[in-house]
Amino acid sequence: MSQSELTEEIELLRTKLNKLAESGAGYDEILKTSQELDELIVMYYNIAA
Image (cartoon, rainbow, N blue to C red):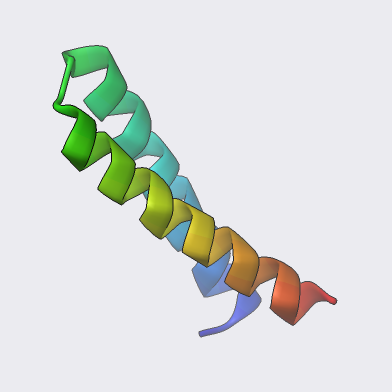
């Protein structure tokens, strides 16, 4: 996955996470999405380094 593709995916997951938090979604769903976002951010920094 390229850096620009990762950036797009990160933005999509950030938006999803914000919507989940605003809607009062359950802890498990928010945690899962947050962990997915964390993984993408780590991938992004590994590529950028």
